[in-house]
Length: 350
Ligand SMILES: NC(=O)c1ccc[n+]([C@@H]2O[C@H](COP(=O)([O-])OP(=O)(O)OC[C@H]3O[C@@H](n4cnc5c(N)ncnc54)[C@H](O)[C@@H]3O)[C@@H](O)[C@H]2O)c1
Image (cartoon, rainbow, N blue to C red; front, side):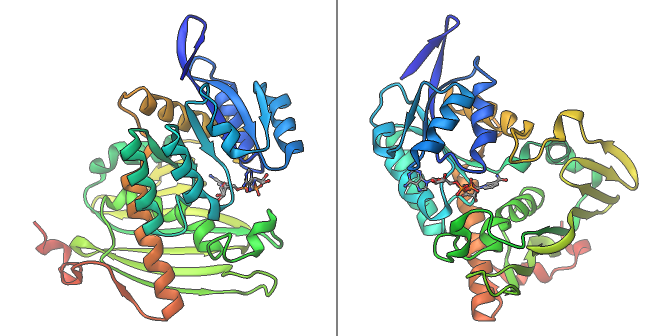
């Protein structure tokens, strides 16, 4: 049900899961009253739900997901739950008629992602994936202007952070975190690669190791991906890297684009997009890209053109993540399509 606010009908939102990432989502809703009303902050830990309600002016604090989904004034939910709950709660929410914005990773597996998309389609609701890094200016610029640079030849992407301990208790449980670094940070980098390649990989090679024994899953991973038309990508993910590194190098026919920290874009050394003053907030601290992301979700709910990451794109990313997991767990390369195409030299491609 929409809610009247300032003479306008806006959707009522419940943010489900009031842990680390929720603050950026809660702030995104609370600071944009022209787009939505924050109806409920929901967490099985009532003290977190209550804190979120007070800080962001939600109308209700709830400790039960079903109670939130039963409310007619909740039209959409933002799922900020541990990874292993994304699929089941998204499906339940869609069946209750709620639009869903689900944090990355969309699910644990591509099969789960398909089931989520089926539930959303059957219910006629929006299902979008919160790939927040798509909403930085530099990343949007690349998405919109890639054809200016000529054909893409290769992508090298690194996301190395330093987490000497779990930032949430479920990170130490491989079933709840769907592994570790590949499920937690893989969606950020592989979604970027998917965006620039505008294609799915034909073949995936991957190695992943657990360097720190206290993790249950992998904390260091490297992968190589082959794409149609002879294009290739390398991806490095680390939980052990200091100082941290977040860099994307894209080799195009006309030169090289480099994106640092998702916010600063150069092409052949010339700055095309500099980090905005509003883009300096940490992603856990009410970051601006989450405001932009929420605006796109609100547009999607209203049936208007939008830049939300769709369920279809989310499924494609989950297929790639499944292939990466299969590759490093089996020690074998995974063929995901017609690999013969990837061997064609670039100049032989029409
Ligand atoms: N976009 C990003 O940059 C980014 C950054 C961090 C986390 N995330 C994603 O956000 C999700 C949440 O991560 P987090 O770091 O905020 O985790 P967190 O553990 O800090 O928060 C999860 C919250 O969910 C609550 N919860 C657990 N089970 C529940 C249930 N059945 N019903 C209601 N509440 C329940 C917990 O009490 C906790 O407060 C994860 O999927 C993670 O991958 C995304």
